[in-house]
Image (cartoon, rainbow, N blue to C red; front, side, top):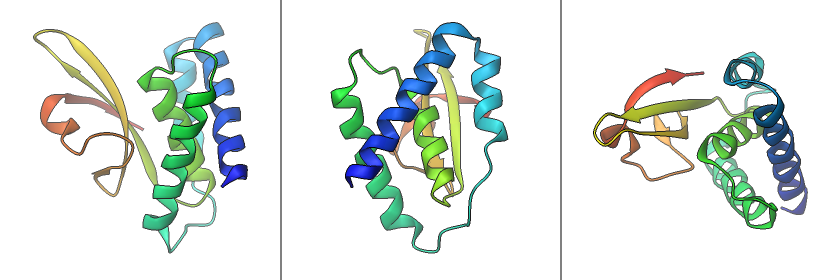
Length: 125
């Protein structure tokens, strides 16, 4: 678990740098190009562990972690560990809000399960 937390924290730092010094297109490209390594057969238990590690890494991160940063890092980490994860970006029109979350096989894994009911999906990668 410690290794997963360190990996999570490192990815949060990396995504934070991409968001600070590059644009959304660069972040999108980073996530879109990352392929799944060695698909994992025990994906549900592993998904839970990875999301928990990311939550713990967010606690130790020096700044407030934005949903896009957290979800992009979680997606990359899940794919690194053989889980086909999708970064989903959605928006709500009135009042306008945007949000990002991660889905595995159509199930929200790092947020509330009803995110698709609140937000209209704009992008999946």
